[in-house]
Length: 265
Length: 166
Image 1 (cartoon, rainbow over the protein chains, first blue to last red):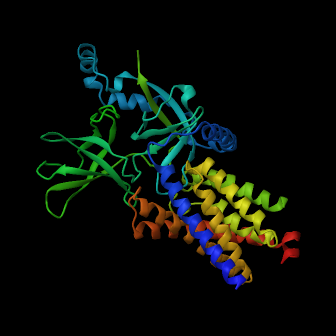
Image 2 (image 1 turned 90 degrees about the vertical axis):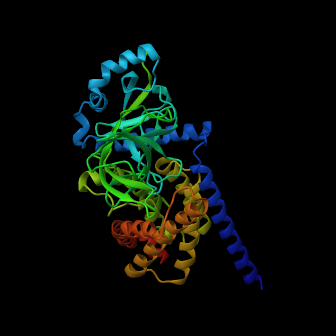
């Protein structure tokens, strides 16, 4: 009798633990969760330790001597023919969301989030370096994500490959007939393709069309390179297309990133 | 007590190092996703045969640190690790550990860990997941972790205290 009662009690404890972990996980992943001071301090301490542990291995990296400002310059040069025009527009229209108007912060990736489902990186720069949530993160190969959480000495970067329902980026596709906008909505890990959905089926899109950020929504500046269209599939009703975009970026192998800070004065 | 702690600490940092640099060395991370912290937690259980409560506390603390260092979650792995340690203590009471049963135990625990995670994400619909993703994740985390688990098992087997306990 006593044994049976004890067994029942254990099962109840397990079930409570499982449901508790579910709610905590949901709370952890909610996009508007702010880090508490204790959590932030502990995280900073953990990142300092991890940075020390990783240091000998970071020196193995072949990219360590590469000039990190290169990523920003490459992104800027994609718009080089427009740069002059943009500068004039900035002056006359007080245009804010252009690539030319950003300060940059280069950072090293300390660790990659080990959980498969929510793709994030942790970098070694934080609010001490002027970083804030939602700032854009790029590499020389194009857009990789945005800052999700920022502590004093580190920041968490949410990658565009995260299949998160809150992770949508407005993109622009340069077609032969003009530009069309759509939403970057996921990642095909098997084929290493970024997926873009909601493209009007009447728009003529060809393989090789260039995809960049559209600047709509205000979070990502216009013109950051994402990739080239590789696959085009129609939905079963023929109303919209889903595009597979190949990027030059190997999302499993990111060691240095550039954060686009706020406006230059 | 000191031996399992050393094993855990080494596995914990090895976990982070390999996650970051395995892809750089092997050019493909997907087949070798390390979960060394979890594996070491399972393998060290025989050191705590008469001290299960200490083992559960260690598991919860380890999960908390794992979240802090590697996942950016809050306490989630503390509870998951606690659950896994509880399952391990139940199973190890009923089976005799050898290389083969250790292999099965590790594979089973890795599967349970991924399934609980996937179930939680499925319930709250934070990330769209499907069976293919889960199978992919489980199958791709087995190779490296089972090899590491077996190496740790053999290492622990020849440590004096563990042999005494068995």
